[in-house]
Length: 163
Image (cartoon, rainbow, N blue to C red):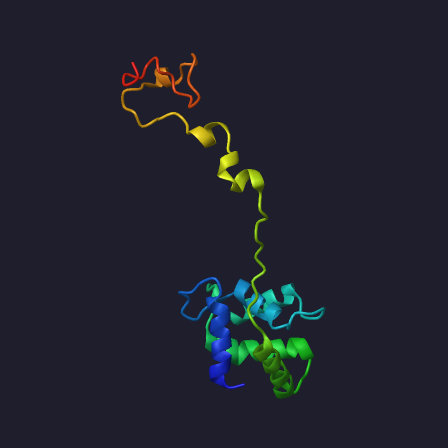
């Protein structure tokens, strides 16, 4: 895997859900990267990945840049995943996993709900509209008046246009 391929993969995960990201990876995106590239297993847990991210980032920062990701993150992940002391062998295996990883969205789609989606089935205020509160001629005491009103909830006793 070349540096440009690794950078492209890194940017794909950085920009996931944030198209204007200029190349910084947060802890959440770092974990998503590890999970989607199938690095996460019984030995490499979310806690270990979060601790690694905390170790990688500069004190007081919330993100890491590509250089830190490439030079420190990848070797540490390889060590964590494969437990190899000969880092290059583990790094090569890890880079193959990274190359095969793709961003996945696990969003859900709402089911159709007949009473919500079909506006012909709306009832009450939703179907006929509610009272007009923008009128400057209606006072609070008139709005709070509970005497008889029409289907829209308008009390024509105070409506000068209807009289």
